[in-house]
Length: 199
Image 1 (cartoon, one colour):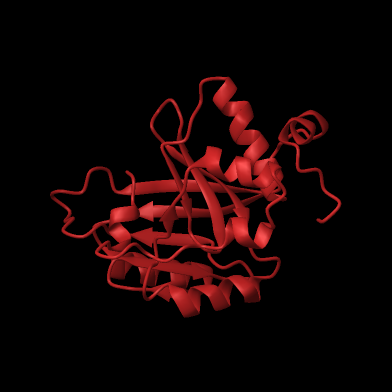
Image 2 (cartoon, helix red, strand yellow; image 1 turned 180 degrees about the horizontal axis):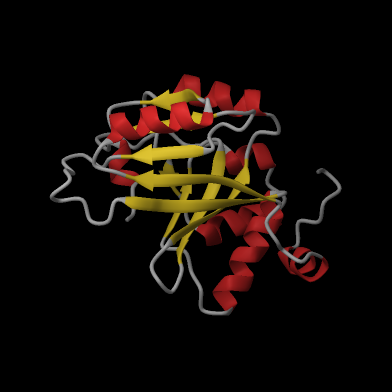
């Protein structure tokens, strides 16, 4: 990774900027517990992290394959469209994610939410029907690293910290270390994880 170009124009020109893999699917629900149990049973999976509003579960080395979210106060009567929350696609490295951001922005397609989740640097988009798509870079090179971060940090902040893509691009192209660029800041004083959420 140290030999990789830090000029996004070169990355964009040399790469096809396709995702490396389909990473995970997140579902909205008003019935977190039954949904949790169904997916654990159907996929023979295990819980990676959960709290009263979210459950991340997996069946392999990935930190999560299925996420289930119940926004506080939502019931069957008030839930606006239980179902798909988002589909996530992962890029091989941060340069590809940022170059793809520039490519899409030049075409008039911009993310509605950019957040450092900790295990991922993520950019969320809406398709023409309003479906949400997450384009991400996996911060940790191993599942153990991501799982350790989740275990040590998600009780305090399971959502992440919002970031400005242009600031990240400037640091990336200036040669700031990847470790510094992707390190998740702490939650601002007086804020909750839900303050970082953008619907």
